[in-house]
Length: 153
Image 1: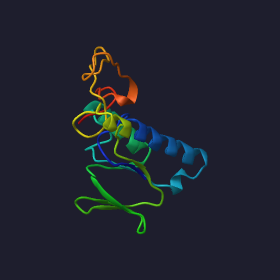
Image 2 (image 1 turned 180 degrees about the vertical axis):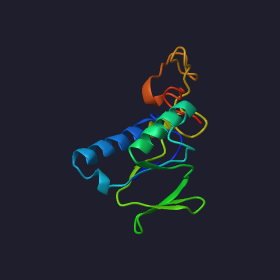
Image 3 (image 1 turned 180 degrees about the horizontal axis):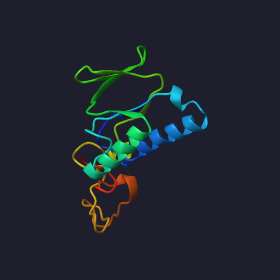
Image 4 (image 1 turned 135 degrees about the horizontal axis):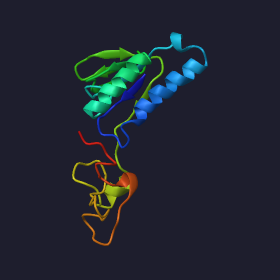
């Protein structure tokens, strides 16, 4: 089972890539017909954008990867080997790969550079990569709060 625990993720396609890699691996080993793959997500479909969701949804169907949409993870009960949603839906698993809530480094929060939503990303001007708090500071990569780095739904 591949579980996307939260909708905020720096690279929203990565968990899908993992599902497709798992499919390829089990196919190469000749045991794909003995393995069920589930993609459990809080999204209403496979991806964040409608056209990509439609295309990826078809590919997931072709690969027989089961999508469990609108699943908002409340807890993992490892003793019973089930994911439990806030509405008490349960999805059993044998092996769980979960993508946790994406947050920036604690250093960002400790330095007072972070944004107001508590996710520890640095507010950045998307045209200049300049910090919105400090004129002499530039920010790149996963530390930014840019929409190209962090998918905001």
